[in-house]
Amino acid sequence: MQDEARHSVGIDIGTDTVRVAIGLTKGKNPLAVIGHGEAKNSGMRKGVIINIDRTAEAIDRALGAAEKMSGYHAANATVSLNGSHISGFSSHGVIAVTGREVGADDVHRAEDAAAVVQLGENREIIDITPRSYSLGDQENIKDPIGMTGVRLEVDAYIITALTPHIANLRKALELTELPKNTMVLAGIAAAKAVLTDQLRENGVALLDIGGSTTNLAVFEEGELLHTAVLPVGGNNITNDLAIGLRTELDIAERVKREYAVAMPNLRKNAGYIRIKSDDKTCMFDTRLVDEIVEARLQEIFELANLELKSIKRLAKLPGGVVLTGGGAHLTGIAECARETMRLSARVLSPPKFDGMGDKLAHPQWATALGLMMIDADDSLMTFQKNPPKKGGFWSFGRARK
Image (tube, rainbow, N blue to C red; front, side, top):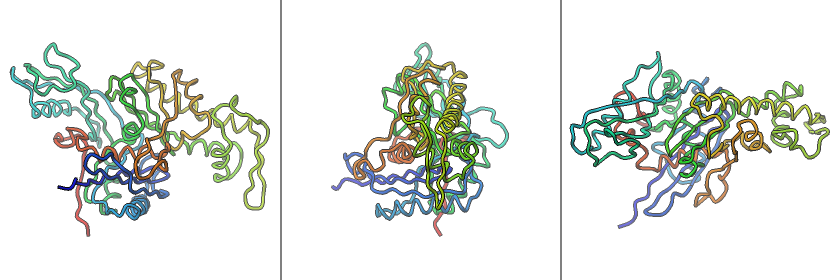
């Protein structure tokens, strides 16, 4: 009997770029990347859709490129959800089990109970992550199935989003004619790709720096502790440079990518930057460039500090800060994060997968590859297979034309 081949598709719908990764798992062989594609996206702003057709077109072009490379026609995918409208909080669920062994249905009922919360107007649950369970005096249980008790309690983390933004993303995906899609918060997907189990256990903050947003995901004792979407990203640095240097956006982007450093003391050759554009040469003082870049980076890290302070983890995570995403390429960004957040910091890329070698082993591919990994995981979450009436990872279907 031949080993069954299973395809997995991750679609990172970023503000600037849509990235798609297609994987293949066959038998006991590890997950391999067999196709990838990317396309510029002009239909979003700060992680939310402002033009459905443009976003759908970008998804279609990126997916088409990945399908052509892989020879596989995608029927479903796991896609990223982003935007500062997303928020998370802890919740508690309790049910009676009357002294018998706990079964899978009991676990689902406890998680359902945790999902019964009062939400704001036009807001819905997109994910519930069980962190630990309790059975009477037995606390911090990871898997209660088969154990005996009278009352089962679950400590869970709930992520919610505004319904209109979800509906717009749903519509854009419908236009691509993918029959079924599962939504995952971009920061959680990036964490899947770059964080080790040891880092999650020790306590770590992941910062996925995108074009217009930065996703924060905090883990402790192996479980998700907190999430937030900060409304700033790499594009803000470009905009600041364009204003401060009084130059065009495309030149400001070149300054950022080719010459910027995160902190002035990291600059080796101070003086002036010369950039040729068309028939003119632009000159910029490196001191002004460094001042602009450092100010914006410090803002991003200070916003992350406020989130850590709100959960009493400011400068108290043994695993430190892990930086990833397209904005993590900036020279010296880890040193800036280390100084501002008073934690160890490093830039991490996703692992090298079979099939594509190191072509995608770069920070900007972390979310797409993390989504692909989640899509490949049959045991993604108990909640997806048995979602509560109002919550859990949600999906939708649509017949192809």
